[in-house]
Image (tube, rainbow, N blue to C red; front, top):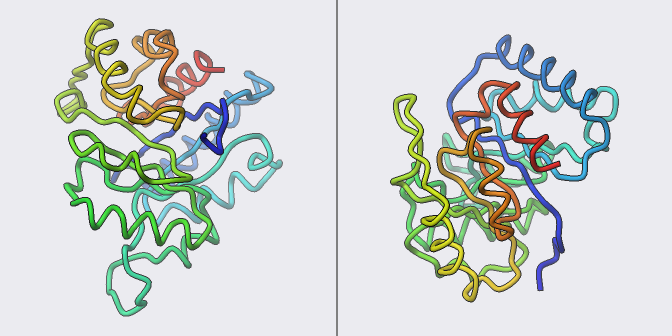
Length: 228
C-alpha cells in the first residue's frame, strides 16, 4: 500500500538550464498561471539546479505558495553522509530547502547500489525520493518513494521529442502493474502538452516527470491544467 494514496504529481526537471534572472522570470509567469488556475488538486514539484534552490525557495515562500501543493526538489543527493566529499550536496543541507529529490535519473547512469544509498540518505533526512528507473525494476522493493519510469529511447534530445504512441504506452503499463502494485509511478520521457492527456487517460501513472517542456512556464502550466 502506498503512503501517497491517490495523490498526483507533476515534477519539473530543469536540468542544467537557467540563470537566476531567467529563473525569476519563470517563477513570475508560473505564479501568474497558478493564480489563474486557482485551487490545485495535484502536487507540483520543481527541481532547479543546486545554485538556484535558494532563489526558488525565497520566491515561492512569498504569498504562501508552499501551502498550495507546490514543493521544491533537488536533482540529486549525495549517497554518503560523510561530509568530506567535495562537490557533493548532502541530504542534511538539502533538507532545509527541499521535500523531494530526484534519484537515479537515466542521464546519470548510476548503478543500483548507488541509487539505494541515495534513497537511504534522502529518507534519513526526511526527503521523499523520486526514484527514476527503466531496465532495473528491482527498485520496486523500495518503500516510501515515488517512482519515475524513464525509457531512454523516449527522452527528448537536441530539441526533438520522441514520445511513444498509445499502444506502446499500454504495453508499458501492463509490464509494470503487477510488479509495482499500488506504488506511485510517474511517466518521464518527452512529456509535453500535446501528449499529457494521452498519458493521463491510461489511468495508470500518478503523474509525469517533465524535462524540456518545463523550461517554458506556459507549456508546463498547460500540463498542470490537464492533470488538475
